[in-house]
Image (tube, rainbow, N blue to C red):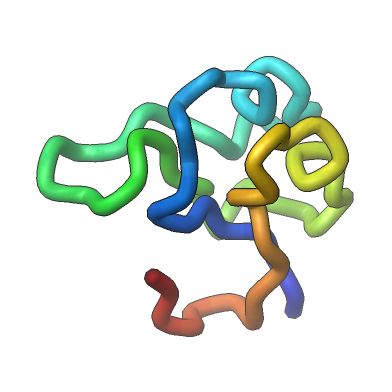
Length: 68
């Protein structure tokens, strides 16, 4: 299944967090390269996060795939 992930390019604006209908985006742990993370088990792949991201930091990936 294809889901979305937040890359290290994320500026932390929170637009995706506020837009996600599944509430699949959360603040990341301190050691994470991005300020936000996507909870794969909640992401349905709707792409609403990618549509609102001003820096194109929400990208589609295969579930479980390693990301930057």
